Length: 454
Image 1 (tube, one colour):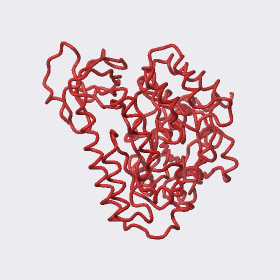
Image 2 (cartoon, helix red, strand yellow):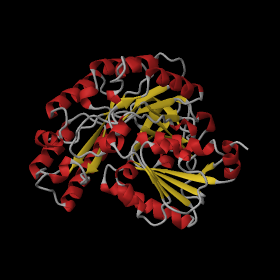
Image 3 (cartoon, helix red, strand yellow):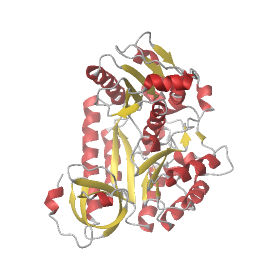
């Protein structure tokens, strides 16, 4: 009997549960892992359900991400003490020995190895620990594990990995250590897979990577020209750029985005600090003036464009004055929301040896203030759209009688559930803001907005 047939037969009726920590790129890669199990006869269940195998795809950006990893491992073993537990991803790549010491873990696979999991594991029986990872950065540099979330997600939004790794040397970041140098999926393969994703019925394709704007360094095509090719593909879809560095968001990309409905009017643009002193310590590639000029230009071109911002607070050397500079800088910018990160010391980074550490309690206080500012920014942005018509892509899930969706500029919308709205673009009127969400109505409807309060 061929080995692959034998493997499928042994796996029939077995269940695997997948859990993702970290970025959108990790979600696309978890789906690629899931496909390996599906093709071998496994069924995928929720991570909270009883499963034969649990796979945790990890993040190592912050200490909290690693702490959560350990908690999730213990949680899976409480559900099924006999389950086979696999840990992979960035945390597994950087500190495999640390994970291998966690009681109950059966396999630790690095960043490359997760894309060929069944080459290392097959019977999933608890015995000796398997710990396999790419040991050198150079080995990581030249591999590209294909990943798209289409294999295990709903047919609404697909995460599509087009780039991996990073050549930047930000002093706080472990990603270049975990994922290697910047590299991209070949343009022909991007187009081939993109057309397949559209043909499968996905209406929003989120382009993911560690540094998406760096796409195509080794090819005769950059990110802008790739986008031009993608928007020329026929079909009813839109593209969302997961995140793009401010120095890589060119006038050409902005102009293309504003000229077509096939690219979302939404940019997530990392800032990290509103203090030039801290930006230099972080080894970022722009100044606050550069960033302000970019955001002001975007807002002038389209005041309704959604702009998200990453910010880190509590970085070594960040005084109260530096923090206030960051707070005021963000307060005065025409942005939509913040993703706030409390600085966390990461092994093997330059920042860990920098002087003038900020006390943990003070880091948390500053993070809280920035998150409150984010809530205010989001509310003010949403409020501008009350009474306006927006095009929403509704998702597939029925959440207690509610269906959710996103506008192009990343406003989260609620509406009474209707299965005819699932995975459809629909013109709605924004009625009222509820926290981080809005409710909406379709022309001719009459319903109580209070029903949608969150």
